[in-house]
Image (cartoon, rainbow, N blue to C red; front, side, top):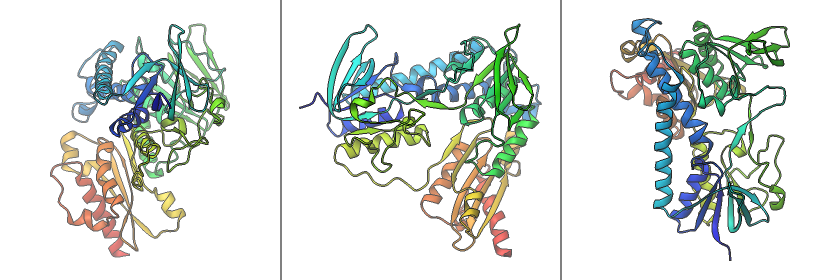
Length: 464
């Protein structure tokens, strides 16, 4: 006999979804969270804080209205770090309250402390006071998430050399910012601070960035960044990071260029927060980044009764997919066969402007040697785009010329992460170009771009 049917280590998106799913199946579930409050990285330092920060910046800076009133327009002339933090903390408090209520309503027990395996089914939990308690469970879900990668050569000081967890607790806004790492996190923060008129330099050792996004979208996005004077330093590795006599971070690149700024954000990757779990006691290994390998269909680790979900298992590391992974893991653990997930899920990057994509990129379609045609719509072509004062933003759709089926949708611009779901539905339902040509969309909306892009592709296909 075990104390619980399932112990969940971590209360982020995958942990909370698994716990509630297990409870709804009538199982006893314990959630172990080492943070001060439930929610995990997603609520406290990742998804929710960064997206709240973005929305606050766009509102207070008047970013969305500058198409009409000029680049100097601001809703609040002097924006302080405290303005950003106030709204963020309100949002986080709400998220925690909702989650605590969900756990209470579903009889999910929670315990604060650091968890570690002491056997295949036994978890030792150490509280802040040092008190330890051991619980056993028939099944365990590892949903501990990740933490920022912090190499030794970076002089982190918590003041002006920060990682992506520390940046959400700013005391003062910098006048200039250097961001190392042009992945999703780095790009999001670089563009958010750029919207505040902070001088931003984005540094990436590879010659390209966000390589999983359609290249034409990245070209459009890059043009937008350069138009806002975001300096891109691509294709050269960082050789050293030092602090000047004035205390400013100074980054020296392999090509000899030097970047100096008031603040440095190091956002070059994350590692699984698994080092304290004593996974050897459970017979589970990790890779060099602390991530755990699982069977994709069931989320089982090398120990069949132990599951892992969320960022700790790697790509795609999205809150949306993590939630579904947690649900699937709990269903499988308790004998339910969850329905297979849809073939395509959307990917959203909350940069300024937003990027969202679903399905195959043009590069992938071409590599598979599928005969295809593309349709493009510019947001400025729509009446709603004019009303909103949009000068940039585009939608690109890819169709098979043989079957007429939609193969991919790629959007950069205002509302991209909301608009993408129309394309996602058509894609998963195996819809064709005819849906976009024959259907009526609300007018005026940005969703009209689907019809414009569909007609653009149809005209080319008809000629072909």
